[in-house]
Every structure is written in structure tokens, then in C-alpha cells.
Image (cartoon, rainbow, N blue to C red; front, side, top):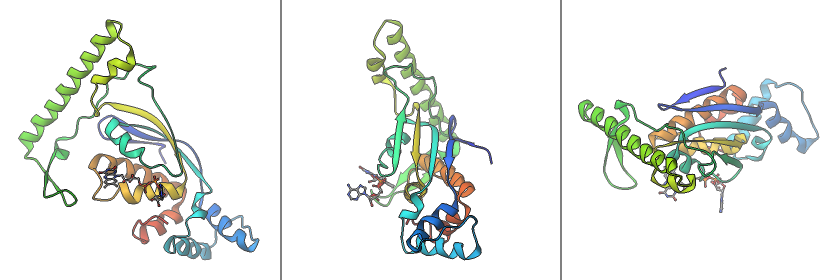
Length: 228
Ligand SMILES: Cc1cc2nc3c(=O)[nH]c(=O)nc-3n(C[C@H](O)[C@H](O)[C@H](O)COP(=O)(O)OP(=O)(O)OC[C@H]3O[C@@H](n4cnc5c(N)ncnc54)[C@H](O)[C@@H]3O)c2cc1C
């Protein structure tokens, strides 16, 4: 499987390092009985399903996934709210110049919100208006980035010049986690209630979980994507 998934117009999730398999779930659960296996058997699927269903979450923690992510700052802010079982390091806009890379939605994902807080639904804007909006977003980010460069050229410190950049600018970070915390992320952020943009990242993470831990993923799905 490809270790890079492209997300949004310029983002990606790259699986930088991984050490994860279904057998570690089975063996860590069975240590209670002093048993170790070298290969998965059919009955082990039932055990993983039991652990998932009954929310015995700790056997899903003996593994790690290290992701290199490029995402808009507003997505990163949502992502970094996930504190438990996650480690982060991010590109520094104090020490490095920000790249000229910002989020411009597809015409089809420019939406309006209908309803009240807590029960919004999101409807697409009509295509001509949506197309105009993508241009407005692109121009606004371009103007901010030119202002940023103007300040850098005049010797303003990067840490101050960045204050004019919008949250649609792309940032990069490493995020390392385990399958249990990953499933909690997917439960919350791949859900219809989560913002469209972070949902695209959550689905990329789900595809990596599926590739590395297929039985875990299958039982996660069959239990309604509710993390243990
Ligand atoms: C659709 C959506 C809308 C949101 N809107 C807002 C918003 O308007 N404003 C806002 O501030 N946030 C918002 N959030 C963020 C949300 O409140 C959580 O901070 C975020 O989803 C991380 O979830 P988490 O705490 O389960 O993850 P983690 O921080 O990874 O925690 C994992 C689990 O550990 C346990 N845990 C962690 N910390 C504690 C603790 N201190 N005490 C007890 N148990 C703990 C909980 O069981 C938790 O589920 C939103 C999230 C979603 C998905």
C-alpha cells in the first residue's frame, strides 16, 4: 500500500514509521493467561471483537503509527486537541519561512450552514457562487502571504511577520500514536458531525489502520466505529 495519501488541495498524510499488527492485540490480552502466539488464528478474531465490543482498550495500545502530516493550520488546531496517546512536533514559523501553500477548497466543498449550533447541516452553495468563493479565498491568502514576505524583506522577525497569515496556511507536523488513540480520533473526526476538512484526514488515517491491523479495523467497523 502507498505510504502517502494526498488530502485536500495540497495536504497529505505520510506513514513515516509503523510497528503495528493484530497479533500484538491478541498476545497482550492473553498475557493474563501466560500464553503467547506467533500467528493469528480464526478464534483470535473473536477475541479482538470481544475486546472492541466490551471496551477493553489497553491491548490496542501495544503498537505505534508515526505520521508526517501536511494540513491547514485550522485542521492542525483541531487535531492537537487529541492529547492522550499522541506525541507531536510541528514546523516552526519562528525559525523557518512559511511555504506559499494554503487551502483552497474544491468548488463542490464550498458550503453554507443551515440550522442552529449543535444541529447544523451543511449544504453546497450553487456552483457559480462557490467558484467565486474559491477565488476569494485564494486571493485573500495570496494577499496575506505577500504582506508576510514584504515584512521579511524589510527585516521583520519571522515570529512577528507570521501574525498576518491566515489559518488556511498549510503547516507540517509529526504525530505519533497507537491504535487505541487512533480509533478515538477516527470515531470523533471521521464522523459526519466533524468538519469536512478534518474528516478527509481521519479517513486517510483509517486507511493506514486498515492496512496494518486489518482484523482490528474490521471489528472497529462492525462495532460502529466506536473506539474501545
Ligand atoms: C464535532 C466536534 C466538535 C468540537 N467542538 C469543540 C468546540 O466547540 N470547542 C472545543 O473546545 N472543543 C471542541 N471539540 C474538541 C473536543 O472537545 C475534544 O477536545 C477533542 O475531540 C479531543 O477528544 P478527546 O478528549 O476524546 O481526545 P483525547 O484528548 O485524546 O482524550 C482521549 C480520552 O481520554 C480521556 N481523557 C482525556 N483527558 C481527560 C481528562 N482531563 N479527564 C478525564 N478524561 C480524560 C477521555 O476519555 C477522552 O475521550 C470538538 C470535537 C468534535 C469532534
